[in-house]
Length: 252
Ligand code: CA
Image 1: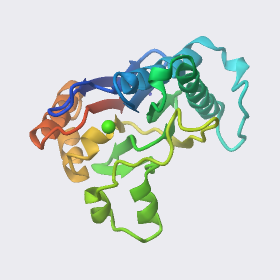
Image 2: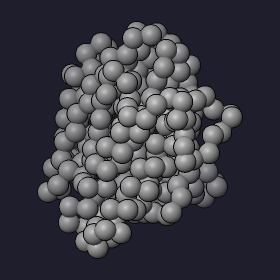
Image 3: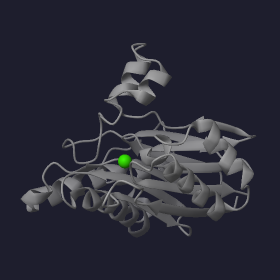
Image 4: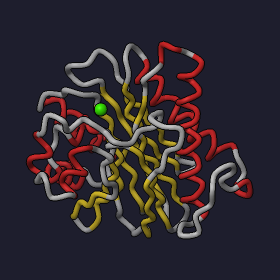
């Protein structure tokens, strides 16, 4: 399977700083989006540390080093275990940065991470940034938000529609930098020809409904640059209240 990818980020129309970071590392088939939070420049720093630290682990440690110093989960492939270890190490790096510099205290970041081999797309995430799969003209969400409203939806206390408008919709329940240990959720998808994977921050999903995301991506089939641009333009047309990041990966 050959993978083509493109990513784009935009500050949006209301914020002064872009606290999102992303990475498209085509040779290693590694794709990342992180959405940072924290005062002053701390959010930008947190999301950058997450992206740099995950890519450093994936690119610069050897396969046989496995997941050291983190545990190996036999339920998942080695690829996925490596990605989960990278996310756990990123958490440690964010905490270390805060320990060294008091001005960074309280910062944190989400992360969605995708890493592929020939057959499988491994996905790991923490927070409310998302991964979607577009296959056979259907959009499916691969990640479950680590957010207060999502937990309420799962518990039957809120509907999806209520969650989208809820004043606490930005409250996340898991982030890098939030605790000494972090548990990323992981999934493995057997790739099919024509699959498109979308990694994005909530600046996109908070502004553009899922049916429209599907329409914009399928309309620009094969032109990932154009699709990313139109996703971001649409989020900005709707208000652009947050930073917007979209990374598209197509399997062929
Ligand atoms: Ca955000």
